[in-house]
Image 1 (cartoon, rainbow, N blue to C red):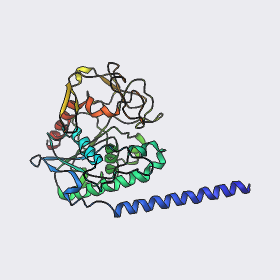
Image 2 (image 1 turned 60 degrees about the horizontal axis):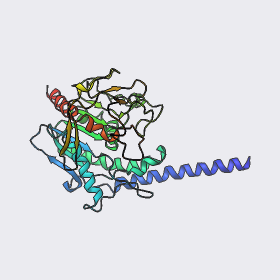
Image 3 (image 1 turned 90 degrees about the vertical axis):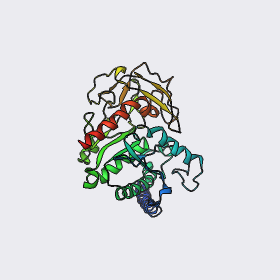
Image 4 (image 1 turned 30 degrees about the vertical axis):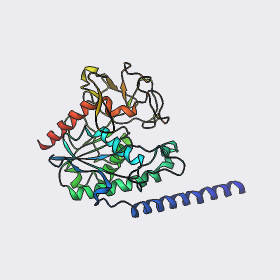
Length: 331
């Protein structure tokens, strides 16, 4: 009995200490956040000024990291990681820049090493990343008064959803938001109930909504983005419907495989068909596309998880849809 009481006391002390340290980290992160009034702290700043709509684009994970190296360091602006940061944004920007003036903040994103930690242990590092993103977003809202698309992939999608949870109900955001493309991360019914101002896309042209999906093979039943037993909300980018009907490859207007300079290296029309899974909410890609031809690349993903190809498989459909929703906003 005495041993049990001592053990519980130690666990309680450790819990309090962890909470205290997390709070300290959050405070330190806020105090040390970049000055986003300085254009040098943006990967993109007002690129394409002639556009009537902006895009606030948040970079996906680009740094591997390791033990004790859980957030991207921004001290060396010539580092390979910073070049990869801009390169990853360039791979996505073609979907948005035909319709939007581009903004994309540098931020101390978490490394891949964080996603190898148990989920509850990731939050202090994600909180640090988010402290930068929210600061940049607030500066953006003051600098531009145009309607905007909020967009991100993977970690960037997670950051988008966090922004909408915190700011989405504010009039200056709700009135200006064309749509949020939060692709490659989950959003659940429980989250929507907790934040009733969040709305998922139900069609091709609705505005003020979240567009989301996670691509995988039919055999996959768990992933980092959508764990086993979790159902995410999504829309099929081939039909812009939320039912579970299969959409053939004839709906695919072009898969585009891009490089770090925003060049399309390969394009294929009618690339793949897909359907939304009734149990997981994920986007199941037809068997013509194989895990051998499109491997997961990173060891945090299993074979058949097409996470790295979410944007590329549906590039032209997404590009067309951004144009459609921005037009619908003005109408």
